[in-house]
Length: 117
Image (cartoon, rainbow, N blue to C red; front, side, top):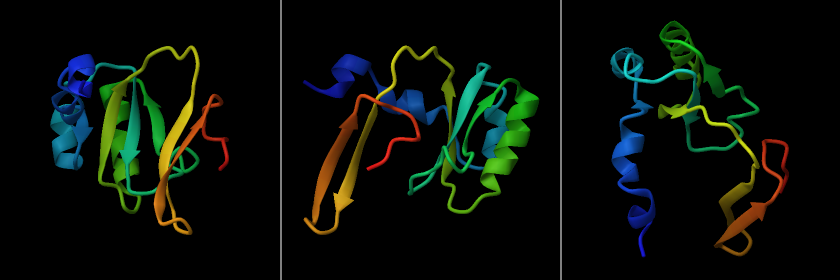
């Protein structure tokens, strides 16, 4: 069984909601439904604590927020996700354990950015 069978073609759905730069973002903000979340795409953790996950209510706010996020270092893009009600939040991650030289799967029934390893 593949993820595509359960979720459909997720790649195309996610790709169309990624702002790669400010020029690309100008066109895409008109296509996004509001309110939504802007999530900075970066190769490190801590984006919630750094203020790089933000609720956006309008196209005007999206332009301003996009400029602020792209102004940070190491931002590869911004994922615009629909805002949905959260009933329960979990934490899941895969991290590299350098001592074991192997990936480690982490899971907690307590989600959010305050969870610690």
